[in-house]
Image (cartoon, one colour):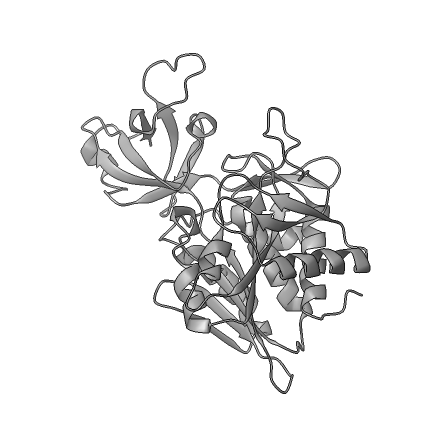
Length: 334
C-alpha cells in the first residue's frame, strides 16, 4: 500500500479542474485489472469490473483525484504572482512553503508584511515568488490561469504512520486500487470512479453517478480526528481503524448500510470506528442525491492536519479500509 500511495504523489500537481496528470497515472494502474476504462466529459476516470452473477448489482466506489491549490490571477510588475485559492486552503500552514506549477516551475508562497499574533494570513495578501526579476521575466515561464500546489511528499514516521501531501484524497484512490487488485472475479458490477473537482463542491461525482445509476455506493475519503491537540471532540482517532461514516455536515448515510458495514467489520475482526463529523463533506452527498437517489455510505481514513503539508495517516487504518471494502464486496481476505 505504501508503494501504491507513493506512486500517486507525482512531482507535478493536479488541482481541481486540472486532474489529467494524476488521472493518467491511475489509468495506467487500473487498465490491466478492469474490463472497461473511460474518461467522462467532466474528466472523471470510470473503471468497470464486470460481475459474474446472473443479475449483478451496480456497485459504485468513489475517491477523488483532485487536490487543493492555487491559480495565478495577476502578475505584478516586479514579477510576483498573485494567486487565488482553489479549495479550502489553510494559509497559516501554507505560507512559507515551496509550491510547484504544472510545468515544473517552483516558487515560495509568502505573505506581505508582518502577520499579527493570532491572526491568520489573508489569501489576498499572499503571493508566489518564483525568483523573477520582472513581469516579463515571470511571463517567460507562467501566465494567468496557471495552477500550483504545495510540493507533494511522503514521509515515514514512527508506529507505521506517514505524513505528507496530498494524502487527501490520494489515500482513498490507493485504497480503491488495492481493492480492485483483489476483486478479480466479483459477483457484482463494480464501478471504480476516481472523481474530479471534489475540493470545490463535489462537482465530478454527481454526473458520474448519474450516468451509472448505481444500486449502492461507497465513498473513500479522509476524515478529521479528535486526537490532535485542540481538536474538536470526536470519537475518531488515528490508529483506531477504518471510520464508518454515519453523518457529516452534508450527508446522513444509509442507516442499514452503516449497520451492515459495522457488523461485517466485527464479524471479520477488522478494526473499525464510527464517524460523526460535525463539519465538512465528501462526494457521498453528491452520489446520494443523484438521479432518483442512491443508498450511499462512506469508509473514511482518519487523518490529522487535513489540508496542510503534513497530513498524517496510520497505515493500519488504510489496511483496514481495504479489508472492509473487500469483505463488503464479497472478496477473500486471505
